[in-house]
Image 1 (cartoon, rainbow, N blue to C red):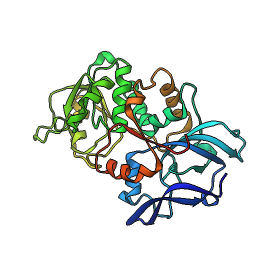
Image 2: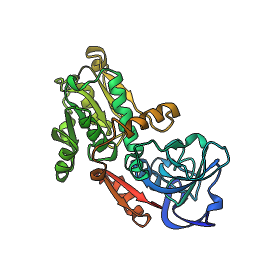
Image 3: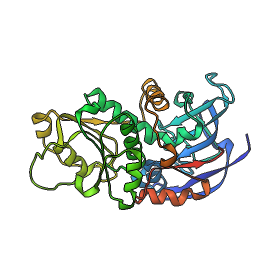
Amino acid sequence: MKDQMRAYVLEGGPDEVRGSLRDFPTADLGGGEVLVKVAYSGINYKDAMVAHGVGRMVRNFPHIPGVDLSGTVESDSSGRFAAGDAVIVTSYGLGVGAFGGFGEYARVPAGWVLPLPAGLTLREAMVIGTAGLTSMLSILALERNGLTPAAGEVVVSGATGGVGSMAVDILAGAGYQVAASTGKADMHGFLTGLGAGRILPREALVEEAPKVMLREEWAGAVDCAGGATLEYLLRTVKYGGSVALSGLVHSPTFSATVYPFILRGVNLLGIDSVELPMPARQAAWERLATDRKPRHLDAIAKEIGLDDLGAKLKEILDGGARGRYIVNIGG
């Protein structure tokens, strides 16, 4: 291991965060039994929030963000992993409470580390990343609550983002009819290429009429937006249907009545990929590597280097996400 590594480092304080690419002492990586030589990382909306101080999620500086990484084990004092093992780490405290994946090395607790599933490369794992894991968890939750391809159309909000694009791809690959919602008119071809049967403008999922219930439309929904979009989805999901909620791009707050729940038996399913226990995490990743592996990873992924990271983090925070950006760090 080198004494210095290249990393995207945040400095300043919770109210004024500045990021730059610079050399960082590897001896300062902090605690954790497993030292990983990072091959790839991925950019998530949460990374963009951290990098710009949104929500004051990080209070100790300097800090290396990046909630995803894939790479190979350099050493492991716990004895669980051998040098050279291919691994992935997503969420837990990575990139928020602990230094993350936007550097050449990362030191993490052994309990956060997942062996790379057979059927995935290190690059593919980061194209999927937390976004794909969240999509998979959303779909599995919908299916546990009765969703099947025969039940009808499934709608995906924020469909050009990481979670949304993965959800469209996985759902279509599993035989579902998918309606994809986006505010980006130039991305319709991208979404139909992933398997969306029809494209809806973002505004189609917002209805501010005073009616507490609207016409039943969807067998289920994957919602990455929250806010008024979630309000609309709850009022339009079919009887017994569910909304899997994982995002807040529209807003973290929403208004609702009890009527969708007591008149149509609608389920609101919260999706967490941060503190998800390892057995459930591993099971979801195994599905992502086998029968539910996204079919269009190359179309979804755009590869960048550490030099491009600052600009892309700002672009994503401003709502410009299109698929997944992966950062080639040592791949």
